[in-house]
Length: 327
Image (cartoon, rainbow, N blue to C red; front, side, top):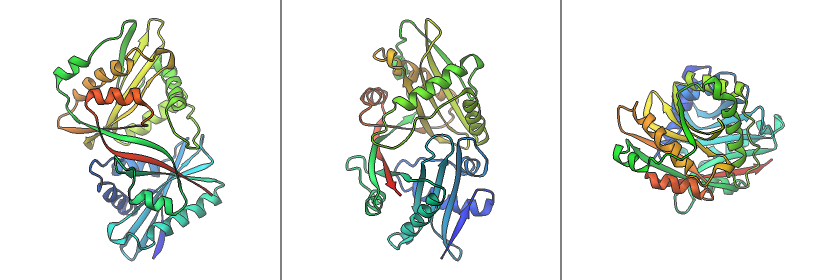
């Protein structure tokens, strides 16, 4: 067996790497994650905020397991995020452990002091083969999120029932590019969201968004073949009070994502979460040409957002648990 370094620049190697990762993810009832081209752009290109690479454990022509590594370059430079996936026939044979040992070696060499990993788990128990492996290797569970899904399209009548404009706020929408007149306020709202979003006991720093960073993220998203629908609520003074974003990949429109939904603290309690989500659903569904599943994740402590999602028809299908290992 040998370890293969993966950087996304060799198409054949990356395809084998990605195929194993994707096969393991598809074992979930409702799989999520990047498609081939989305993942390749993330790993092969240079980004100001992130460097991604991987490892494969290979025996001849057989890929036994892989590790995907995210190295943050602006915030969270003390940690490496890692995902380990092992092909079904080779589990419980030491493949995952050998990959983890190689990741730890590389993380220490780069001066990182923490490994962070996410494990999918049963919706009720929060346990899985991944959580058992993490526990055995000394990781500590630091955060839990509910994985919720909803089948699209939602009935137009249902959206009409839920559509209740909030007095004093105007709805503004855009697609893949944030309008210049809103980009500074939008970047500020993105930063505020990363401060307020529940993260349990994870040792993670908030993200500092700037207009330049938003533009870089938008360009990366387009190169990945992804699309995004954004709806914001603006108060009488022209202040961006709430936003929501949904989207996915054009090559895989059956798998969509509810990304951020955020309401500023001073504007909460006015049903703005629902007020931005409903028109965003309409915008998203206007371009769908087939049924789709929309995924979202929220901490159980984020009861207001979970209540909004349940009112829309989302249901919990799994847990996403966050783990850390001190090096």
